[in-house]
Image 1 (tube, rainbow over the protein chains, first blue to last red):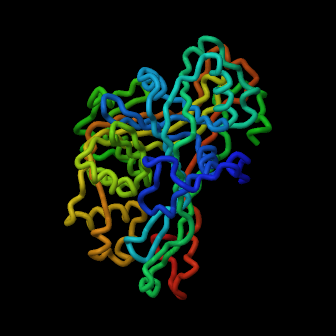
Image 2 (cartoon, each protein chain N blue to C red):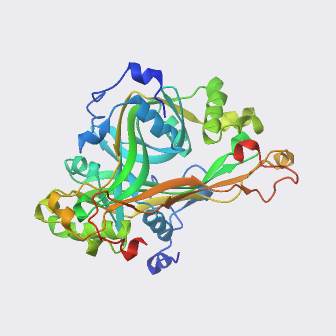
Image 3 (cartoon, rainbow over the protein chains, first blue to last red):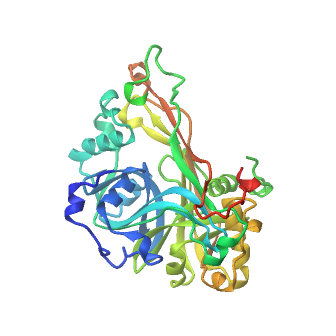
Length: 219
Length: 219
């Protein structure tokens, strides 16, 4: 995946802040916007953490990225809106494989993960439709113009939040296990079990109107 | 999957606490231990939220459940240990499908999610090996007795946390879209795109010792 020009102009070799610094196994960390965008764009949802009365909450929310803004949509939105402009932490984790080493200790996972910090703000009413279009197009490109657009009461009932992607870290691992040198002589099978998420054949709604065909963007 | 006897003896029809109550679309919520266990046992990792200096952090961690204890293992463990016994929020989200409605507003996802609250405590040194075995067996049953066991320095280098599963909620959605009655007449394809995570064929380590066969638990 080609990195956007923006990222090439502004490479982050250093952590943008202390809290965003990768502490454990820092060589697996990066602060690259292209890598962050790719992880965000590869997942339908993220986990959003926030603090309410001093206690931690984590809630899954759908997200969509437009340039350096991450929009959030889900059951936490209404709870978060009550808190005003609030500090949040977003995390996206993609598992690519289970790493089977010769020793129990060196078992691991291949993954790509993003953790981002920022202030969440409410999406104003006049931007909601644009944001919903971004969610829809990310979920399934081509769908938005095919379906009934949201009406006024639906737009009013929708809560969406925005967070600027600024303070973040990316962490990833790939490749075969890394064993202790003497363990390579053991008669133990070692390698990677690749894991993938895939979309299966569409299941039509039992109430699908007769004669309605599967649209081209679903084939 | 059969529910354990424990759950049948102690069904939770009410939220165990105010913060664990499902607020948005409460009819999708449940407080059933069997459902919580199934979600925890179906995912290799969870997202753990905690508060440090008043700010939210969310970090992915591997987990394994033994009865009503959730063990956590990952880069947050060392950061969390510095905080002592700390309030955490665990979230696991499994996406089962994308729900394509006739209106933009009723698009949704089929999912099963768990959010649990509790105090994290350090796993004492003399329990670490048992906990690591639980992680290993959950990742891949049969693997633990096949590999080199952890030695003393490795056990010392391992941080694991425990959280009792007590205060939690489960939320899920399944089935076809729910459209506005008048929208069922629209000429729009509607239904579900099922999503699944699967494990692919094992990839041997390039340094695999010649003659070592794939073990039976990997076939």
